Length: 162
Picture 1 (cartoon, one colour):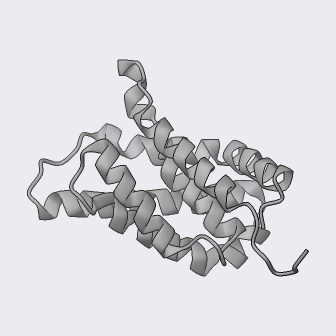
Picture 2 (spheres, rainbow, N blue to C red):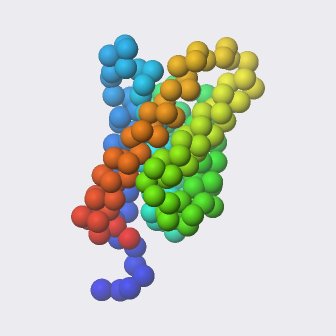
């Protein structure tokens, strides 16, 4: 077996596809405003865990898929996820050494950056401002981060993704 060879690219792809499926998974009316930013959370994990494999281009691609799936302005999520991926890549060495609760705070800020960027794009095309519920998903993502981190780490270790 060759050293330095990447393994598990299909596992990364499947986790991102599952995250995209969770974005469009039907929820009851009361729960729609609490839907986490699944694709962004998964992208952040892979950028932190494997920065040499998952980066800005992956963020752009996942963002375009998210734009198509949600029917938003083409490029709205792509730009936001690219920015989040860039920031996660720049900070990955610092984030990795933080305890999980501090990681959750950084993830909250990254999720907030994605939301703010999306809000900026909506304002640039003169869409009406979203309701206050628009700001709930970053909080939900922050609370879910320890479990998402643990699940994706277990998947990465089980399938020997490197």
